[in-house]
Each structure stands twice: as C-alpha cells, then as structure tokens.
Amino acid sequence: MIREIVQVGDPVLRKKCERVSRFDSALCTLLDDMKETLEAAEGAGLAAPQVGVPIRAVVVNVDEGYFEFINPVFVWQKGEQRGPEGCLSVRGKAGDVVRPAKVKVIFQDRKGNKFSLVARDFFARAICHELDHLDGILYIDKATNVRDED
Amino acid sequence: MIFLEPYEVLSKVYREGAHLKIALSALPAGEKGRTVKLCYSVLEHDGYLDFCLASIAKKKPQESLRLILKIALAAMLYADMVPPVAVNEAVMLAKHIGKGGAAGFVNASLRAFKKENVLLPEGDEGLAIESNFPRFAIDALRKEYGDRVRDIVLARSRGVSVRFLRGMESYLGREHLDTPFEHVKIFKNFVRDEGFDRGDYTFQSVGSVAVCEAIDPCENLLDACAAPGGKSVLLAEKCARVTACELHPHRVALIESYVRRMGVKNVEVMEKDATAFDPAWEGKFDAVLCDVPCSGLGTAAENPDLPLRKNEAAMSELEALQRAILANCSRYVKAGGALYYATCSILPEENDVPVGEFLKAHPDFSAEEVSSPLPHEKKTFGVQFLPDRAFGAGFYIAKLGRKI
Figure 1 (cartoon, helix red, strand yellow):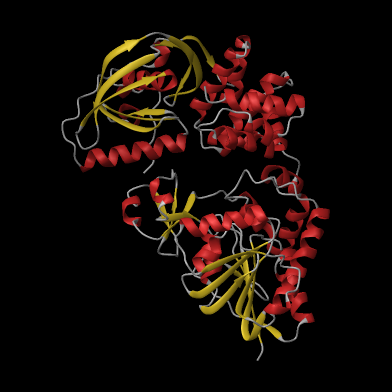
Figure 2: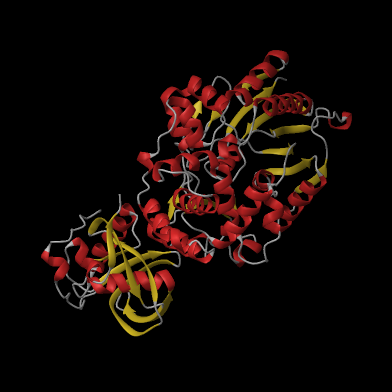
C-alpha cells in the first residue's frame, strides 16, 4: 500500500527515532509499503519517519540495487563529496550538501540478521541523507543554495 | 560514472557520424550491456527526447549538454533509473567533461522534467513521436483498433520472459509474473547464470511460446524460417521430427548452437531458401510453420532497442517476401496436413491480409480455428496477440488446413 509522505513542518520528521526491537509482520508490512511508496514517488530513498513512523528503518533504491537498513549505524565515514540533493518530504526544493565520499554501515535486515556494507559516491550520499532522518535532521539543515526547482 | 561511456560513444555518433555498432565495438570488453542499452535508447527515441528537452530548457543548450541531458532522460524513461540517481550521474558527467559551470543547469532542468509537460504535436503525429512507431503503422492500427492504438504502441515490457525446462522453483523467490504457460515466467530482472549454459532455461517471448502452443503435435514438422531456433526447439517437444531451415549461413549457426545448448536431438538444421521450391519436399510434411521475416513491430515493447525505422518501401519488400514464402512452403504440406503462418507483427498488412490473399489463390487450403490461453483478438483467419494485453508481446498466427 502506498503511504502518504509527510512534509516538512510535521513534528514526526524532527523526532529521534526508536530502535527496532521486534522483527515481526508489522515491520514487514511497513517495509513493503515503504518500497511501494518510494517506487511511486521515484525517489532514491525513504526513511520510516517520512511515512509517519518514528523508528530506525530506511529503504534506499540506487543503481547498486534496492536495500533495507534496520537500526543502521555508521562504522566510519571517509572523504568528502559535494552535490545536489532533494527530499520527498521537502517538495519542490533542491540544495547542495557536503557528504562523506565513502561510508561503512552496520545494519539489520527485516529478519534481524546483521550485516555490514561499504557504500561510495551517490549510494553513500543516499545512506547519509536517510540516516539523518532517523535523528530528526533534514538536508535543508545542512544545505547551501537551497532553491526552488521550477 | 555510468553515463561516461554512453556519452563518449554517442559523441562519436552525433558529431563524427560514426556508426553506432562500430563505436560500441571499440569499447573495452566487459559489462557493456548498460552502455549499449542507453545508446540505443537515446538514438531510437531521439525525436521524442528533443521534445523532452524543449520542455525543460528554455534556450537550446549547447551540444555536449544536450547529449548529457538526453542520456539522463533516456535512463529515466527507458532504463528505469530513478530521477535522483540520473540527476547525480548527469551532474558528475558535466563536471567531468569540464562543464562544471553548467552543473546547476543540468541539475535543475532534469529535476523539473515531467512527462506531462512534454508538448507534442496533436493527435497521431505526436503519438508517432512518443512511441517511435512509424506513422503509417499508427494509421493502420488506428483503423483496426480505434483509440486502443495508444495502449498498443505505448505498451512497455513487463520484464524478461524466461521459459524453464527444469529447476524453475529455485528462481521463483525473485519478483516475477505468472503467464498462462506454466513454465514461462516474466521476471523484472533476470541475470543469466550457469543454468543458461546447462539449458535449464531459455529466454523466449511469451508470444513465441503462444505461437508454438497453437501448433498441433505431429510426426514431421518443417520450420521454414527457423533462426534463432526458439520455436524449433520448443516444437521438438511435441513433434517427432523437426526440420529447421534458414537462408543465411550465420543464422544457421545460431540455430545449431541453440539446439546444442538445449540438448535437443530431434531437430535437423539446414541452410535453405524458403522461397525456392524443392521438388523433393513436395507434400512431405505433416505441418509447415512459416514464421516469416517481418517488421517486428509486435516486439517493440520487449526490445525497445530494436531499430524501428521501417518505411513503407521496406514494408512492401517484406510483404512480397512473406507472400512468396507462404506460397512456396504450402507445397510441402501433405494432404490433410497443416500450414501455419506466424509473425511478430501487429499490422494487418503482414498478417490477415496475406493469409486472406493466399486462401483466395489456394482453394485447397482453409483457415482453421486457433485458440490460445494468452489474451488475443480473433481476426478473420488467425489470432492476434497485442502487446497491451499479452505481456508486451505482439504476435500473430493462423492455421491453414490442407484438404484431403
């Protein structure tokens, strides 16, 4: 089911999200819905708080593939890249953000299995952007040259 | 950087008039699949992409930036790349080629792109540009199907059609669609593995399978235009002997390797011209399949890379060939046997029209009922599968029985 993507101004986007402790069918439904919502919106990533659920779960769809990260934590961040970003919760705007060029994260899948992963370039940018959501941070807090898209 | 290779190849094509295939062959070996797909998408949809560009850039951007934007648009429209990824790749490429100053422009114009904002000419002129179908084909389909023409020519592929011989279960965990055929599934993504070389499965359009399903089992079948061999191999499951013919030697080799990979023993491959009468074969076959060369317009959804620059002159040449093959091969059918005529076209001029003319000239043949579990339209003589309702496949088959 496609869920509504909440927009900036909604307090849920500013909460520090709770860790996921129950890997149950409700989590699976949420993740399936997030995937469908992200596909419909043609975005690169979506965090659970963006559909109004303040828990530590994000999905990312980039050239490397489709990923689900539950309880993700950075192990390290290296280098620097600067580039344009947008956000499905900040419609019609874009801005430039400096992000690490390469990151390593540890995370769990929807069954609770633990993994680690190294991402670089745009994949790393997408992960950083989504993980910020879990701490109530939006890219417009960090961006320069925030502008209207049309 | 995903767009760099397509950019280099297409620069050669646009600026130096290089031939795409030659420019592509100059690439280093390895994973070139995506570059190939993107290059074809840009060139095949060049006209439509010009209209897309006009909808996002007020002034005409310089040549190199136009190309970057076209690649990014093609990636979003035809290669399922999500906009943020395409935008990022385009900006990186602009910076890489020394157009960093235009990064903001590239970013903003791509983000602003919406398919709804593309202003096309009114009516079928615009539909021809959007679908990349030749205008005469749009006109013919409009006459036949009315407003459904839009759904037919804009139908997108549903994925990769895979026909399994064994081991299907281990692949069904991946996202797929069921088809009316138990062993044929359509996967959103399917990368071939060692199972392909073992002949566990093959890539075969659901339309091609439907054509084979419509053919009755028999002792001795001739597949008169058999390359690359998919139908011959499938028909060998229900026909005791299949003779697979092909005009061009390099395509004969294609059938041979296909037959070998699938481990089929009862297919005999031959180099033979289907328009030249062989007296030794007169009345010798229980069934003859004429899967004739055609425009391929029925497979546009499955092969968006397929060059669709068919003009009416090329079409009349094809149509003459189709008639010649059908008339010649009909002489190989024994009394009481069946002649099958098939294409991967959706144009009546390549399907029911030549069949009707053949029947008029050959009173010893009559059209017989064909049924299929794949959604289809019943035409006067044969059945037509259309891409909007048949998983992207536009095929045609008619069965003509020879009287005893």
